[in-house]
Image (tube, helix red, strand yellow):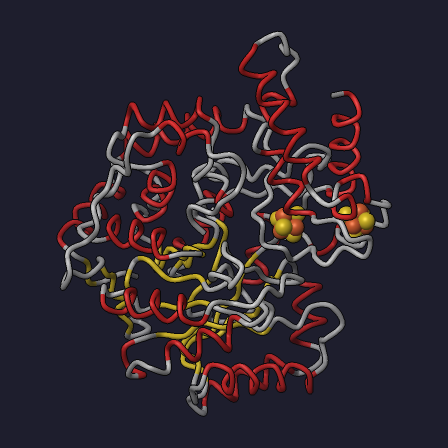
Length: 460
Ligand code: SF4
Ligand code: SF4
């Protein structure tokens, strides 16, 4: 599948061949209280020198050479500071900051830019930034986000034409059917209305170069969707915490069995390049608890928690691009530095990261990636915001040993963060309407978590 690799990549491929694996979470989001960041004395990385470029992989079937790191444009910087968001989050984006990030990315060999109609202003702002560069210097990935009652042929056609206009291009390099979960969803959104057929016609006309889908279903749903067409690539959620089992969080009922390992190995076995989203689990793996951060720091002193997560993903030879939803230049610089002269994990380090995954999961975090697909909540609750606050102290809130001072301090900090929110957006405001449930690609039992947070706050 992957025919031309850097020397380091070639060595990596040999390593995984002997591993018995078929070879095998946006970054540094400001999520939670980053206990790790607070205790790390200085950034353990240096900026990639001017003139250097990130590592690439060549995919001969597609005729593409792609940087191993891609810029995810769902969490671009906003004028108010911080990262923007997808569905339901419409903060104005900071065009100048995005221009600067795009310029830096292209100068350092990042050539894959991922956006979607569902990401608010992202297509427009990304299009403006990229239009200042030669068309051949970047690849655009966008999606058909025809969820939420927009599954007609006309709506799909309109969405595609608007994407071209917003992005100021006359062809899309990588077009994804957005957020496919199962055959039923594919049939209603793409087959029955004739939209997929129309998209294939656009591909024949050269208006789409490669076609794939982003997958948010369970293990059992993937083979059927893969069998529908000779896909050029498939995008999946892959990170070390989800490798063995994608946690659905408290109250999920244990259904929807999914693991990054299964999805990755299935696609590699079919010879399909794997595009990775959520390598850092929406920032959660960048802001791990101090206990997890200390274990990582001892083993890999030169890597931040986020860099550990990205290295885990980039080390897998079937990965085409590791997409990181970056929100500022510092994140971009760190990630570019990591993927310039990339040092992959070997078999031992891969296994070590899986032990870290167990430790991470024992902290009781809600597996929210802050994608905001569940927003807006009709009752006004800031769903990802409440989960972010809960996760900043999840171990202290779920452990019974509250006599410990460090846990008590965390609980106090949680309570302050919670109460500092506007009353109207707190978990208390949830009316249990369940409108958010089908929208969450992580299948999180959102209303149950809201009840639980409310109960914890009442007890504290
Ligand atoms: S269940 Fe609660 S959080 Fe979800 S949409 Fe309804 S009110 Fe909002
Ligand atoms: S609860 Fe689900 S849909 Fe909402 S932000 Fe978190 S992961 Fe995304």
